[in-house]
Length: 371
Ligand SMILES: *Cc1c(COP(=O)(O)O)cnc(C)c1O
Image 1 (cartoon, helix red, strand yellow):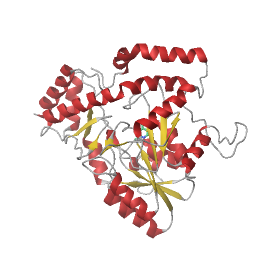
Image 2 (spheres, helix red, strand yellow):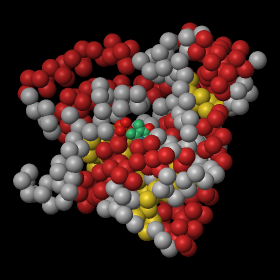
Image 3 (spheres, protein in one colour):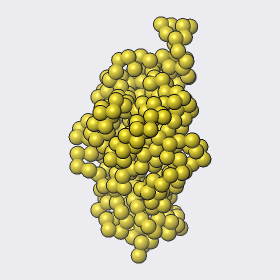
C-alpha cells in the first residue's frame, strides 16, 4: 500500500499527459510557453480569482506575495505555530519577524480568539510593525476566514492565505484561491493538485498586486525584460509542468470526490476509536491529508507499520520550538494546542486511487491497534 501514489493516476490519464508533453517538446518554449498562460486562465476560472500567477513552488508563491507587500526588517507577520515550515520561513528570509499564534484543536487551523489577543499585544508593545496574517488551511480544510477577515479589517492587516494543502477546498461554495487579499497554493506532487515536480501559484483580485508579483517572478522586470524596476527572483513555473497540470486539472474534481468518499468512510468506521477530523458545516476539505488524533498515536502507528500500512506525522514539532525560529515572537513559549497535536496526530493514506480493500485494511488495523 502506498501513502501517496502518483503512478496510479498517471496510468489513468497517460495518453493525455504524453500528448501534452510531446507538444511542449515540439514547440520548445520551455520557459513561459503558451501552456503556462492556458493553465493560469484555467486555475483562475476554477477558483474564481481575477488573477492567477503560476510559480516555481508553493514556497516561491509565498515569497513573492510577501515581497509584493515589501516585508522586511522591523515588519511582523502572524503565522500559525502548527504548519509546514515554509509558511514562517519566507517571512524570516525577508528579514521580517514571525509572530506565532496557536491553532484550534478541532480544525487544526489558526485560532481567531488567540489571533485577536496577539494582534492587540503586538500593537500595545509597539516594537514591531505588524503588517499581516498568513492563515494556513491545514490538511485541506479552509481556515475560519470570516473571523480572520473581521480582525484583519479592524486592525488594517493583509491576509495572505496559504492554501498549499487546500486547493479544491471551499466554504459555502467559495473556493480556495479566492480567500484573503492574496492566496497561494502548491503543486508539489503530494499536494491535492500535484505536478511532476515543483510548482505553485499565487491568486489575487488586486490588479496592482498581480502586476507587481508578475514582475517579481521575472527578476523584477519592467516594461521589457531588460528594464529592472525592482528586486525579483526566478519564480516561474516550467512550461512542461504547466502542460502536465492542465491535464491533471481535468480529472481533479473526480479525484476530490474520491478523497471525500474515503474520508467519509474512515470517519464512519473510526468514530469513537480515534478522534476523527471535524469539518464545520458549509466547509469542504480538499483532503490533502486525513488526520486523526489519539493519545495512543505511536502504538497505532507502529501497529500499522507492522501491517505494511504507511502513515505520516504532520507535524512532530510546533514551529515555535524549531531552532530556525529562535528569534520569532512566541519562540519556545507554550502553545498548548500545537503541542498536544504534535504528540497525537496521525495521517492515514487517502490518495484518490486507494482501493476499497486497502481502505478496509487501514480501518481494521486502527481498530485492532486501539483495542
Ligand atoms: C507544501 C507547503 C508549502 C510549500 O509548498 P512547496 O511547493 O513545497 O514549496 C507551503 N505551505 C504549506 C502549508 C505547505 O503544506
